[in-house]
Image: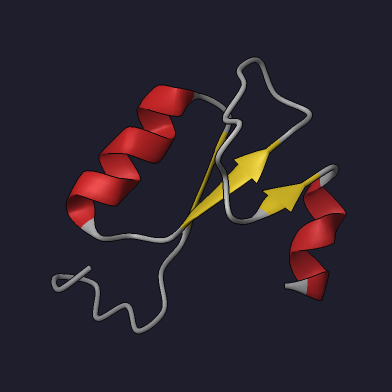
Amino acid sequence: IDRNHLSSPVYVGDTQGDADACHAAGIPFIFAEYGFGNVPDAKMTIHKFSDLLNL
C-alpha cells in the first residue's frame, strides 16, 4: 500500500483465509460469493465481478 501510494485499497477474495489476512493487515475485504469458499461474516459481498461498480 505504501510502496504504490494506494489511498483506498480493498481485497476481493473468496475464502476465510483471505478475510483473515485482510483483517490482520487492516485492509477492507470484499467477499466474492461466486468463488470457492465461504465467509459467513463478510461485511461486503459481491455476487458477480461487475457488482464492484456499485460499491
